[in-house]
Image (cartoon, rainbow, N blue to C red):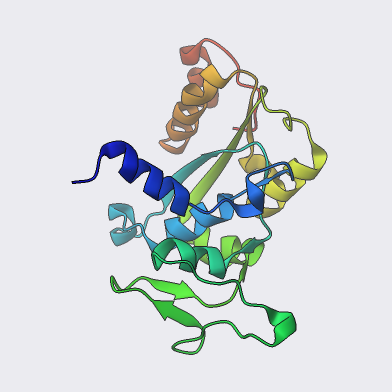
Length: 196
C-alpha cells in the first residue's frame, strides 16, 4: 500500500509545467477551456442553456492549446515532444485525434486558443474573467487586451480586493436573474470596480 505522501509525490512529478512554471506572463487557462468543453456535462446544456464560468486570472493564456500536453496528461505516460526538425510527425489517429481508453478524444495537433474559445467554449459557456487589484498585472494592457479579445471588454470584471470576488460573482448572477443593478449595489453595500 502506498503512503499518501508517495501518491501525492508521484502525481505531482507527473504534472507538466507549461513554460517551465512561470515568468513569461502566461498561465495554462487554455487547458481549462479545453477541459470545460470536453470533460463537463451540464444539466443546463440539456435545457438549451449555457454554463456559467468564472475565471480568476492574472496572466494571459497560452496562444495554443498544446496537444502534447493533453496527451501527456490523459494518456498517463510520457509522450515525447515531436522533433519536427528531424522529420518526426505528430501521432495521428482518426485523421487528427487520439482516443483514450475512457473514450476521451484528444487532439493530435495544437489548437489556436482564440479560435477554440470562439467556436467551442462560448457556445457552451458564459465566461466571466475576474482580475484582482492584488495582481501584478491588474492594469497591464497586454494581459487585458488578450482577455478582452477573447471575451469582450464588458466581460472582464476588475475587483480591487480579493475579498470582493464572491460579491462580484453574486452580482453577475443576480443581474442575469433579472435583478436591478442599483438594487444589487445597494444590497452589497459597495460598488465593485469592474464591468458588471
